[in-house]
Image (cartoon, rainbow, N blue to C red; front, side, top):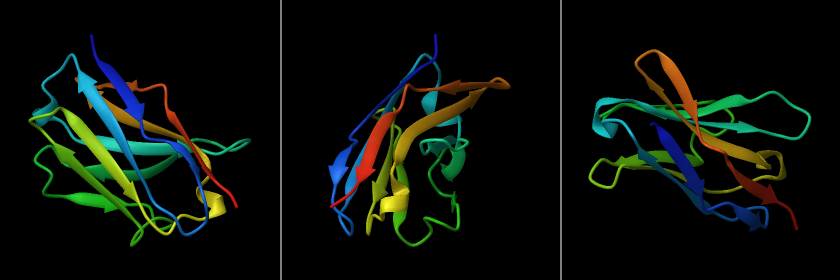
Length: 116
């Protein structure tokens, strides 16, 4: 079955960096786009970034464009989110998502807290 496991979250000061990872299994990873979403306390889940199956095409929400970088390693079935110049408003649970055969699959998330 499809499984997505995120890691790499933690507490970081404003202006700092973190790299999130999401390891996928149960499907042909290299055939599907992968996405990162986030959900802040009391808010709806929102799109952060997407990467095509080959990694050649990426897209970002305007709130993170220029600060976050999505990438993937198809040999390791892993998608990454490099987060730079972090702000307190980036504090959220971060989830990776795969849409496989018209069904959405989510990981359990990893918590990112940006605070001094």
